[in-house]
Length: 381
Picture 1 (cartoon, rainbow, N blue to C red):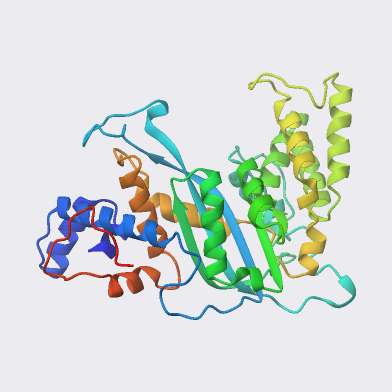
Picture 2: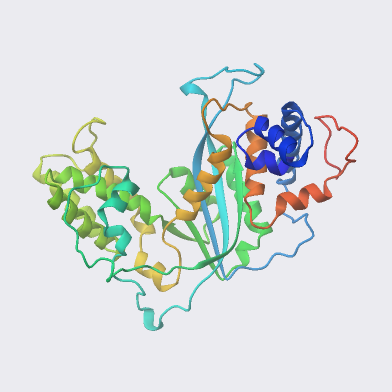
């Protein structure tokens, strides 16, 4: 029942699936009650940095920690079932983190960059526009792109676990640290903290993961550079050529050169490169790119990261957020705030973790299957 509640779109569908597939009739209210109870138990269990499953953690060759925000819609606390929304339509931010144990190929000798050329996917107009959420520019691309395809072969994931919560960043940071301790990530010879430009990501890194190599997700750099290039030129061909030039510099670790070019463009237009403009101003993407690249350039030494065999994109983290959102976010989907929302996030994160932690917990969960436990009952110490 709990596994289904973690996977299918609603408690009502869990009820229907149980009956149709297993011939077991359980009401959606019972599924909801039990899911909330188990989710709260998992949240309490998370408070310890020690493993409780009896398994021995393997020290990773490469430990990669990532975090990102998601969205969930909640009801006003204490108002019961139905649609009772607070400001902003009831939307609240979730905190999500990925912990990957990875292996890497042997790095090249003498510090040689294994992928100096910009990967093909980062210079393909349709893919780049999709990354940036912008219209595809009408440009002519080389027809030999497939034959000359360039791919960065980064490290390989062995096992991933996830943490998800409604907690604020001050509470989520310690949660991430405890999970990393349970996984022995701090003992790994190579440790990476990978994220986008959100301030709370790097506050968590600074407080709890400062021994990890900080890396800015290259995908997010693409979004800012592409938008800036489109704002510099009205002509799509010129804009695309500028984007390819700028993003190649970023890939090769020459971020300062991109910043200087953007500042020069601002000077030519009589704009303060460190000033502010209206959100709908045509030059705003240029200023946003200057700010973003300046704030994150210390985390953009991509040639060095590739020489060490490290990841440079947070695509797995983006995928994890989508996997969580698939269960908690949807039309007419509202959660009790905070208990119901926290419970489903805890269950969903446990369900998509590769170490089987949800099944492990349900197998050893205290209690008797034929006796209903009260909602407030605590886990045995």
